[in-house]
Length: 211
Image (cartoon, rainbow, N blue to C red; front, side, top):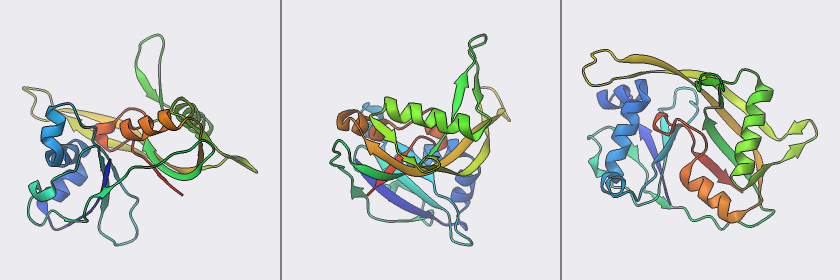
């Protein structure tokens, strides 16, 4: 895997367009690994990092193949060199994590996906997803070792052929930070590669871990 940090230029028209629409952001980032995507060798994940005061927006991108960022428009972003990321996970290893995800459930009657409402429901969703993916959320003195740093709704328009404006969609985006433990290294690595939950094209699902 490869990790790239992009510091977007707010003066760039293309960057402002992408910040206003996650689908456009995904489209732009996909250009850096377009051939691998076409060949089915790629899983692009990305996350717009939390804003820090007046600092420019930062996007973290994870790819399975080495990206070519020369495809970006001139002045779009400051591109830090891609770094190889090959974590050597071990059972019992404890790590810090960050994840922006869409915690939701599917209604049995209609099959419609709906957002979870309470923090407890969202943390329970996270626990299940991590356990399915070879991790375990660590417990602290007051419960699971996790914080919800942001809980917002992304408003995006998704156009279909023949539509001018497109349908306005609202997708919940929750930013989790906390500590986890590796239970099954093979499944855990697969989870890092494929991401967690739905909404990958909206900048959701990238699970970042660090010692």
